[in-house]
Length: 254
Image 1 (cartoon, rainbow, N blue to C red):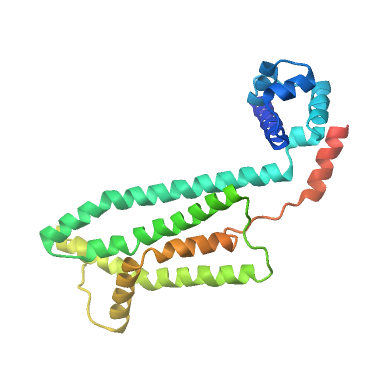
Image 2 (cartoon, rainbow, N blue to C red; image 1 turned 60 degrees about the horizontal axis):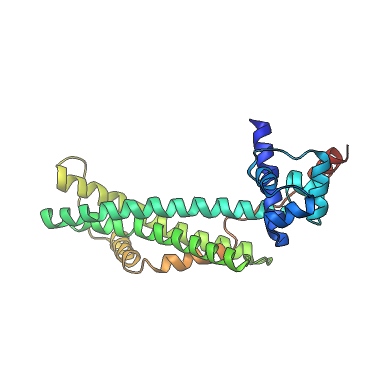
């Protein structure tokens, strides 16, 4: 299995270096004096080039054997970006589908029991969450197309912490009243649970009004999600390329 994965990785590296060079499989095959199918087999991981062929491919692509074997830092960064985008899009889809499925049910409950709490609970939790994910994913996809990067300034990490702190503070402030809305709704519908009615009071009133504002201005969270990407969230790990790069180079030279 490890050998198969290594063959696929080498094939991906050949394909990415070839595309970066602006060559077709036919053009690379001509430079290597092989058939196009041979190049295709290398790139798809069906066959593995020997050492001499690896050196010939590296020369044809104005690269070196290390780049074919291990990839370049730019390749790894691009793959990491694709993986991150895939995860964020999957998260958005899960949240959005859950919202779409639950929304009609809350409207049915509202019509049957004359209680708006389930709809309010849904609109101040799931909807801002999927909008936050949508903003983050959309800006990342756009900047990948434009080949842009997040901000890289000393103050960025502090701005990111402030923004995350703001989102976290809103969530923590609303959490108790959201739990209470859920218990009240369960009591209304099923007749079980503690379900104390929401009383009047400073915190409860403020939390309810904030929940209504979050539900009404949910689109703002798409902007917050976009801002999170601009502020490099989640922060990229610094590559500790020194020793690892030396090890790879030493292994290839040996």
